[in-house]
Amino acid sequence: NAGVTQTPKFQVLKTGQSMTLQCAQDMNHEYMSWYRQDPGMGLRLIHYSVGAGITDQGEVPNGYNVSRSTTEDFPLRLLSAAPSQTSVYFCASSNARPGRTSSYNSPLHFGNGTRLTVT
Amino acid sequence: TQLLEQSPQFLSIQEGENLTVYCNSSSVFSSLQWYRQEPGEGPVLLVTVVTGGEVKKLKRLTFQFGDARKDSSLHITAAQPGDTGLYLCAGANAGNMLTFGGGTRLMVKP
Image (cartoon, rainbow over all chains, first blue to last red):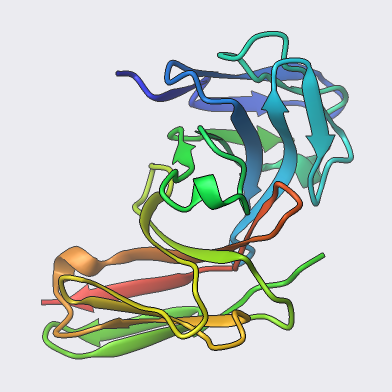
């Protein structure tokens, strides 16, 4: 199993450019999420989805859009990149929603991240 | 926003020493997870604690969930260089979100 696959691994953008970070999972997980990781701040939730056609905002959603047209894919779009969006982005999936009893034995599976630099 | 504060932020110790990492919040969580992350990779789950006062052991790692389910600790006995990494706690509530702490970066020197 490939698990959670993120592309690209590295990306450099100029301020104002747009791009899409791709995330795909082959585990038939209903729950998918995007985090950003900055030094000293752990991981902060950007957006999440509990199933195809359903998305919701996390802690830091401004400047990012998501869609979930299939169970497998959960792309993250930056419409107009800003230097403050320089970060490492992680996609994660699980077969249970966090906080539900069913999640206790169902961890988040993370991709290996996309390192984004906005100049 | 439910905040999870981890301490210490950085820890550098010699092989064989013991250490404890703390994860504290003013909020109650239905469950709390500990992850370990290595450079260039995503976090990997170590353990989930669910019940207040629960203690779980994973070889030399001991995890405890506070009685009020607001805090947790990770204790490593006789640390080894292979324990080096970023340790993250994460709390879950009924809102479908997993909130992460800021992490503790551990370096174990041989």
